[in-house]
Length: 598
Image (cartoon, rainbow, N blue to C red; front, top):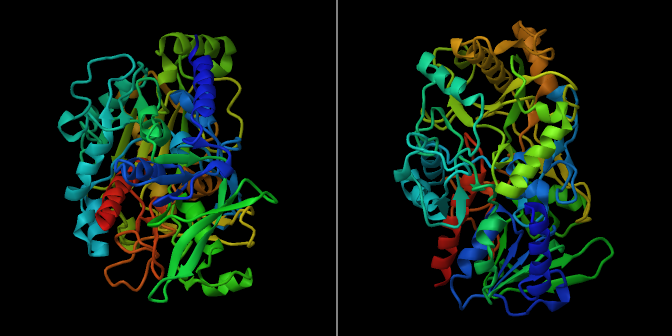
């Protein structure tokens, strides 16, 4: 039986046999929940799993999207780029025209299914540096957010897993900094890649600029190392696959309701006259019946950096002036809800490859892709077991560069990168344009890790089924343009190393014409795209306590009974990919919630 057919049968049996566990009928839910979690995404499933470790607590998770089971593009690591955008399981947001990107609008995807965006992302697992977490601790005045306290949560979450090809991984990671008994599988690449030797030989040739890093998750994050990804041998390891695994979903005190969108958080006055989150309202869609449920302890909002501020504003928590414009009753005036949106601008650089074996063969000859799928479906091996890159690199711009004569360094510290490289053995792009129909290519995707530009999420309607206005504000700060320009030059220097002699045949047609700084800046503005890492729209307050949306225990300011646990609460964007930090955040938040109620 193929993996595709098997996954369909698993999905069918799960939904049909798990009545009262994974639900689609809102009339069947209980009335006596202790906690309600809004959103079965990366963080929400962690919270649900950890709280139901206490058999005396009953938890309901309400998810707007569908089940993650039986979705071949979702479960197969290689198809991560095809899992979005514009699918039945994505939210399908579009940004407003980005004024600093030649007024282009951009797809802005979030996962709308069990697992949330962990079910559609590229599975890249980066923990961030010591400096990142220590910076959060210093900013909030809460030392429990520092690296020393957070690292054990990474280890708790992880189940380090052998790669699909079971090759010898000695020297490719440091076992002492990883966990081997958690729910979340993390692995190294499981299929040979023709770029890997050249990538790592470049670290030998240019070690001062591109040093080798044995383990990109050890906290000293400058250098180039093997990719770590949330892959369980040969399938995606999403938060649904990990934290809602059959042994967890079978708990009698855990219910998951899907295909129901929470439309409002309900508030009453507590004994002190403060607004208290007493329940939620939800519905399957416009014009459909509305339901309510009221937990006895807390509502936990895990809707992500777009969904969470949107729901807070719909519920009356946000900028009073903006809420009044939409005729929404004000529960608590906090102008910072939905502000401080920050995301990583990404850009693909292309070279012509002297090869006929790049991943472009799947475009050149559909038979090759069919054969790869057959191998994957029958043996769980081959190209399709891996995500987008065999390696990942985090690099800093030297302190003596002219950039820092004009701008302050915005990274968390010396262990955090200014830019990142990912390598694709073939043509890769974030732009909604077709790939070339012929030719073989190599791609370095650069990611700006500490951007200065900020955007926002704002209401355009009191209707919960109308998307908010999403404005990441890409490249609105010149610092980001100059950082991107430096990264392009660095990528070209990397590919001009002797390790690429005979393989790199020069810049591809879309890059070759852009050489001067002015030309590169135009290239940047015309080709920058989101990598879908929105962060900070409900950020934690600083130690001054006169800002932010949540306190350092993730409780929403100005109300009681409500926390936010997702990427929106980070006060800064991670110099890496936010999936792993969000797992660590949620693992710690679960302990905070347990401590509050035990």
